[in-house]
Each structure stands twice: as C-alpha cells, then as structure tokens.
Length: 257
Image 1 (cartoon, rainbow, N blue to C red):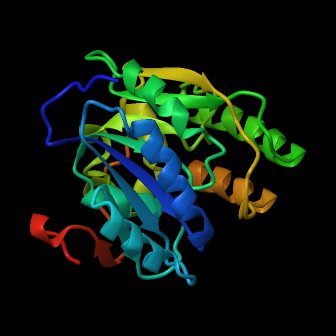
Image 2 (image 1 turned 180 degrees about the horizontal axis):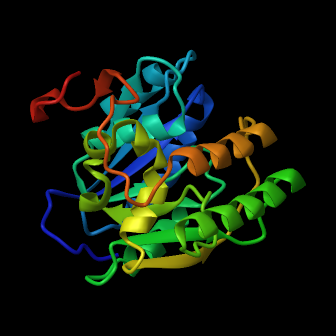
C-alpha cells in the first residue's frame, strides 16, 4: 500500500456502530493487523450512534491503549449515515474509508481498494460476491440497485456495500454543504465522482455476532426517500442531522476529551 499525498494522516477508517460493545475490540484487533505493515499513518474512528450499552466506555479504553483509535458519540440514536457524518467531521485523513462493525466485508480487502486510488480515481467502491444473507435481503438489494441506477444514471453494482474509500475532498464538507440531504452520503459521492471511480469485487462473510437491524420496510423507505428528496443537483443547506456530545481522541491535538 502506497500513500498518494503528504497529509500527516493518510487514512481515516470510519466505522459506525450501535450497541456493539462486543464487536469493538475484535474489529480493532483485526484492522490493526491489516494495517500493521502500512507505510503511511492511519486512524480508526468509531462513530457511536447513541448506543445505550458500554460501547463508548470500550472506545475510551481502546483509545488509551492505542491513540490512533478515536471515537465520536452522537446524542441519540439517529441512524447509521448521521453517525458516519459525525465521524467524517472529526477525521484527519487524506483518504477516508468506510466499513461496518460486523466485518462481513473483510478489512483485509482495504489494501486492494487503497491501491486502486490513483491520480485519476477519487473513489473506489466494493461490491459483494456471493452474499451471505437472507434471501429477502439479497432480493431487496438487487431491486434497490436497479432503482438507484435508474435514478442516478450510474450503474454501481452494489449501492448498499458498506466498504468503500474516497478522497477527503469528496465528502469532508457534506454536512455543511448538504445539511439533512447529506444522509445521501454515498449517493452524492458516486454522482460527484461518476467519471473518476472504480469498482472492486470482494468476498462476503457470515455475520459473527449480533443481528442486522434492517427490515424489508427499511429498504422501501429508503427508495421512497430517494425518490422524493434525492437529486444529483442537491445543494440546499439545511439543519444538521446529528449533535456530537463527546469526542474520544487525543487532547494534545486540540480535540475535546
């Protein structure tokens, strides 16, 4: 893996979570092994979507163990994308990567995505092969892929895949520029980088613990939301979708403890 810039931190890996204290430690250990030999600096940002368990305490412990681990906690449970945006708002990397806490998308695939970032490519999106999920999830995802491709005019093979990486300049100002419409984080990133993106096939593993919170009605709501509110020409600034109540990071760098 080779860095493509001189940012003090090259990679910020942002991972949303909700009531996943059981998964924080294993996720960190596996990701740290993947990045152990990296020749660039990196940080892992866990974005806590208002968990009611001990996730925030576990993040604090991890930060004390490894300062490259940072956490951001939002005031209440408002959804995965707002949590991601909270993570984006405090990250420092030149390149941002996104990954789910369940690690069904393997962090070992990260080097391949980073290697695909070239001066001509600003974003790399993974797509899952042979998905290990319920039939309704696979069918619903296929229908949603068709719908979003028609809505945007872009054929992304897996709109719902949580693993992708983009240059910081692509998404760092989303919350400020798009307000509540920033919930379409990935959609806007794809549309903006439609001529400068790559797609890479990855494996998909079974969920090791916990259960998915998605239901069939959620896919229907997402499609309806996109149909009613999403436009490739989004630009209206609205109120922000989240409120950060705590940042778990290094106070010597000027962050709030």
